Amino acid sequence: MIRWLAIGATALLIGAPVQAWGTAKRLGPACFDAAQQDRPSPRGIALCSRALGSRKLLPHDRAATLVNRGILFGRDRNFAAAIADYDAALAVDPDLAEAHINKGIALNALGGHAEAAIAELTQGLALHPANAAIAYYARGIADEMAGAVRDAYADYNQAARLAPDWEAPADELRRFAVVRAKKSMAA
Image (tube, rainbow, N blue to C red; front, side):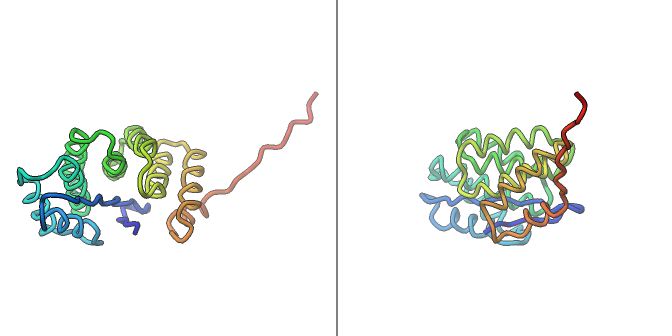
């Protein structure tokens, strides 16, 4: 399921949770469940923090739990803490697509970081995320912030193709008018 949070006039994604499978027993899955909800969750942040305190947490589970806590920080609009968690997840697993994507989303939310957001989202896409539509949509937002309108259109269009039932990319595409340049008759 795709989650998003309204930031100003543009819908901004909150991200894609990552399942922690292993050794944290109930804490890792409880953190994942909290990250899947559509609301801020101080309890979820506490659950994730408790799970992260476990020495039994396997590296993949630690990275996933950091991503999930980052999502929860994002819901609380604590984007600096969210980015710190995504960076910590990437230190554990630099190939975790969702950490790059969620970091790009948080950079979008901070504003003024469009180029860095585009770089993170592009890296996440190169790693073949489970839900690429989220990354294309978020990169479309960053493209617009950077003034790259054609790139934004292409990314929203790709998100709409990948997730045809998701209304947000289609809504963004309705704002665009594709104009084809006429060929010059001058010889």
